[in-house]
Image (cartoon, rainbow, N blue to C red):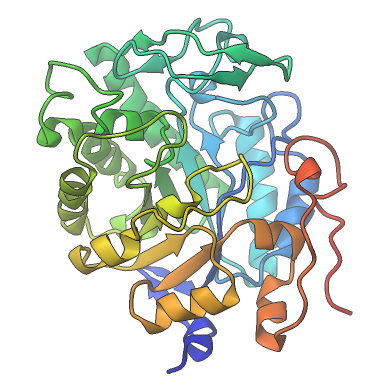
Length: 367
């Protein structure tokens, strides 16, 4: 098949049946309302994009302490779960498929977002470089996080399990465990941020332990073939890094090979600067070429693809589906536009984060 024929062919990611291979990437939009409940507009926003083979929800914190930015939704209260259920129902009414991306930001946070819990938590008490947004939507210096105790880690695993249960109640087709982009699970994986000396630090095997425990907990709620994992080898976003990323992520993939997952979702490091612009680093390693061969299951690739390069990566067998972010923001009917080779709406970066329907639900579809 040609790349375009592949793009518009069906594929099963585990137990999740996709009508095409265009995936809507998880897109933080920071429009949640009081109580970290998804904005009522989100039902329209996601339903507009239900022609995607799969929608991965915006990153959704599993607890208040897991929150890293103002205006991001959670999935840990009945009110949040009820709002997500309306969204999922609207997507399903248009024959769409949607999974919930479960998220804990770890040290990439500020105490103003969770004052009752104090400073953020992380594998080790290492302060990230730079600044982040607090509850006042203003930039603040990062704080030194609290190194998590064994009891904290046990509590975290139960929070993932509870969030997965809420996702199931909301009717999601599955969940994606966010272990990328320098957030908490990635912080445990990589040695720049994990300098522990207990069973969760030191060796690669130990640094993989928490991800394995989270997967095990979530599989008590969803079967493993409805669970995906997102990874970002060689990424630098949120001051993350590792001394030997090839060895680390090869080991991660070998561990995930034994989990019978729906998919791995890998971000190309050429597009690592999430939220920081449209720059593409052409000198970055191509991780789909490095790691796809090692993974025995279905593979989603993301990171700066257009239609031509997306078709090419499918034709080359380096992915089973391609995730698009900014293009889905500005083109709710991206699938139809690719099919027709139609012009694309340009996106308005100024409306990506926060705000109302402007730049959210008002992008036009084809006539």
